Amino acid sequence: MNKVLNIFSFNLFLFVFTILLSACQNTPPLGMLKKKDQVLFKSSPITMPEPNHYQVHLRWAPIVIKDTRGENKTWMLYRAMDSQPLAPYMTLKPEQTEIIDPEVEAGATYTYLLGFLTGAELTGKESIKVTVPKDLVVTKLIRANTLTEYRRIFIEKAGIIETMGERLELIADELHSDSGTIQTYGNENLAPQGFNGRTPEILVIQVKRAFGNLNIQAIGQTGGKGLPGDKGAKGAPGRNGERAVSTVMRFSSRDGGSTESNPICGDLDKAVGKTGHQGGVGRQGGIGATGGNSPRVYVRIEQVSEIDIKVDKIIGKGGEGGDGGPGGDGGEGGEKGIEDIHGACRAPRKGDTGPNGPQGPKGNPGMGGLNNSPSCIKISNKEEGACSLFLEKNGFVL
Image 1 (cartoon, helix red, strand yellow):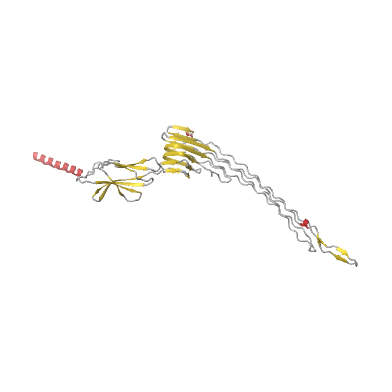
Image 2: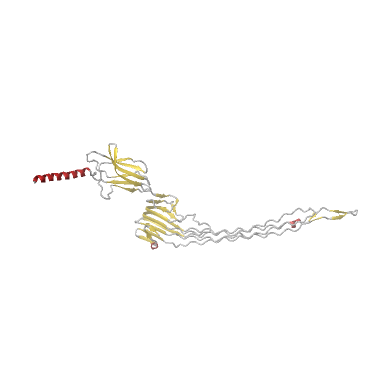
């Protein structure tokens, strides 16, 4: 009985030993054990004060630099920018668990690989892709209305973002403004001729933090110029010329005979056609089109920020009155009048065409828009303006 127990105990020992040995041989290095949803390789960008200046902070789980056989490993960090091939970037120190990469370009995507060298052979362990943020720097006038792909937006003193009346979606982590401007329309804010000015779509600005001074010019579009007036009526034709007749004078001679003079022409000036009458006055130009209303403005800044926001709501001006119509054409000259059987009168000319009429008066200017659009500015837990009139739904402002 004891012999049987001894054999059973020995076999059980061998079985447990075999399991432990197998588990030991298949266990990855300490620190590389993955728990459920555990991320071994992490990254985060470090924001620098200047625009488009970033660093990448890389962290990973502790690494054992000896394998189960006691061989030394040289742990390396490899790096590649965009589609370039991986290249050695840094040799890691024993038990090192993080680095900061200061040599990155804004907007580029980097691949980092953690691995070790055995001789000249690289064994990769963990890799990660990191896209470095890109900032928008506005130094002059730009026309844009969808600004959602930038982490930070910088508007310098001469910088202007113009929406041309379209809905503005400005979403970022940070907004820096050195007295920069966001406006709906600039100097060229005129509707087409005969059309009313547009009321621009809403301006929506949503950022986490904001700094400096920002000017918002919420301007309605100026109405179009009025249509031109119609042309004046044509002038009446001039009177026809009178007849011009040539005659021959007869004289008695001393010997009792008679002689004839050369043909004599009558009053030739009367035979010239008279000048046509002046054309009619042009019609008055059309009334200028109505200007557009100022747009709605919504600003949401999540955190307490040192920002001064000035909102100017400016209605669109009424359009300029239309030009007066052109004067009517002058009347045609009168026909020449002549009856010359002797051929002594040269043909007089037809009368001159009358002068065109004067241009019509200019139309009246149009009416300006109405300034009835609300605005709302939220900074942290403080509200300014008619914020209750704005509806927020799933991050979209209506």
